[in-house]
Image 1 (tube, rainbow, N blue to C red):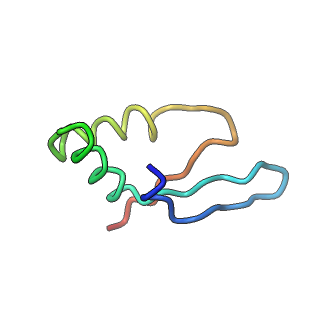
Image 2 (cartoon, rainbow, N blue to C red):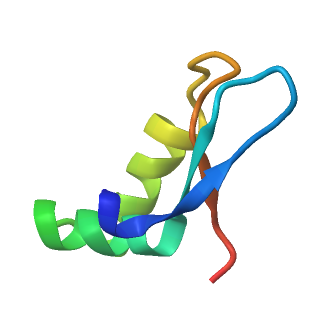
Length: 64
């Protein structure tokens, strides 16, 4: 999903966090997997937004 990467974010005492554009992630999944926009959004909500991977996870910017 490197095409959806916006940049990086740093916070005191934490590792660098990669920031992605949520809308672009949806578009990539729709094209790559052949999913509808609803399927792609649900996958992102469950597997990215809804998962806790520790304090050094990714950030999705979802304002389109």
